[in-house]
Image (cartoon, rainbow over all chains, first blue to last red):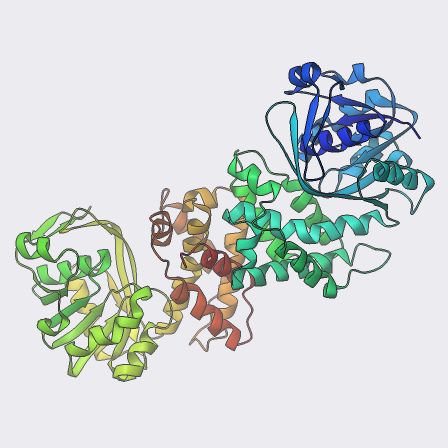
Length: 306
Length: 306
């Protein structure tokens, strides 16, 4: 199946998945900003432990309108730019266009659904370590798996087809029946590690190697799971073995620095609403108080530039 | 009443109070370390908004044994040096010597009581902004009030006499019947402000000026008061108006940086056990869980050098 795909938010994530899909034969168009000149002239280079590659010709524009209508919009925009999300996606939409947001945290599908209708929207959780290198280059460091699902229903042919397309492009991908559960599962990792690394300047290995902060990570995970299990999930998340597995997996990430930590070190704004603000709100709506998460959110917020 | 007084831990606090007592006619001896040469030769200078002064002759030694036995030992040692507390105080003790610890947090009186008997021990809470300047100089920035009391009983003639001695030296001082309550009251301020300033690098004015961190400060104060009120105090601490008063008082401290923040900025060890570890333990013993305080303790601990 060949699809016309637009990538909105061509950061490390958007460029990486877009490049893989193009290499696999999909018709991909990128909305570009700072890399426009370089990518237009020299194409896009991907370095990866799975093998480097170079796309000599890449379709890109600085104007969404020039990308034309597509079958699928892939959203990789930072959530801090979400006030522009709808205007960036709208020109790409024809009647049956689907939108798959791979953004972090909660609230992104809702935003798209409000504008375009819930039935158009899918969400995905990307487990990807990547960053941007010199202009026109993206570095894939490891992982890359995606779990995606429909926003307003369970399994669907469309979700299966998109997952198959990613797999054909070399991306491990599964369609899930309960997107909300998958989002909360990811938050169980993101909420403690992103925030604590950004706040303290320590990486995941340092946090786990220190008894008291390791205990806080586990306590935060318990708070998130308790809140998640009030969100009408199809199946509750069992704190054990879920937490132990997640800790073990993180122990293999040698001195990994989550993106939020790097954003803080480089004095960029953090994705606080998607990863903290909205989850705290959803928890509170269902009567779950996440005390540690609230404190973490407040202290991260304090460090943001006004 | 003229007393022989030894000052152990001649940092900004010990030097300041010792200097005032000497100026008022008391026989004061200082245990000195890095300032020994300077103070022996040139005396001790105090700068203060209440008037600068200089003591040309100061009795000091690098060896406790040379200070001789005294009537009163004033302890100003950092609690991180408490493993040396008993050996430093022991040579000064004659049969009726009293020990007044002005150290931060909890656990100091107990340590002295175990070694010398509870009846010898008093504790005091100092509200003092001071720091050390060039060698031989201490800067008094503001405040200075002391609340002191007996460790093992209520009001006493001895506590009244010591309080009177401080007042004669120009230090506002009151004897309190419930030292434990006074210590916990001070913790209601120290626990949020010392730790949050040290952890985030923001001063008290910045913390209070930011809605979410201001709310966390209040929530932490509530946790501490709830734990305090399980410690068999003579009278419970009423969250209101206590918290509001404390916040208002702090709002007058224009961009004040608590000592723990300065210690962290200068990469010195923090007084974590006295201000966090032992209070958390006392709270847990009485079934009070201080969740935010525990998280703060863990994260401060993480930032300490191994």
